[in-house]
Length: 122
Image 1 (spheres, rainbow, N blue to C red):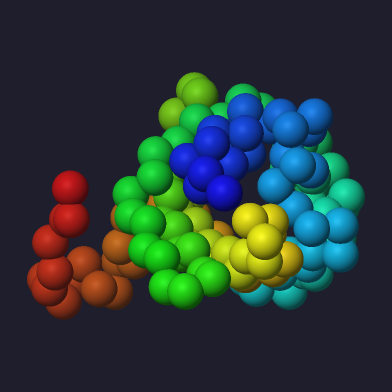
Image 2 (tube, rainbow, N blue to C red):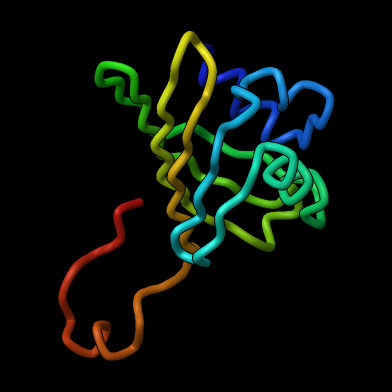
């Protein structure tokens, strides 16, 4: 499976192509919002999400039948930005499980800024 092509289709909300990456009984878990999806539900949630999106794969790791990605996802108008860490388990080149952790991008909280610790990554 080409993980870069998969992410391109996710970002472009390509409903026609997305199902081709999955085993029919695959499960997708969004842990931060405590949601479990079937493939059909995942595609519906992704393709009905409001707005137009783009993104950049920042990291890919492969371990046996698992691909791990870190992706920055942002709205075309740059009003929203997220990072997602995804664990894909594959069988016969198809996704059978995804475990994802989505987080909003933003500034450090005030209490930490007041401690005068850390510095921006970028």
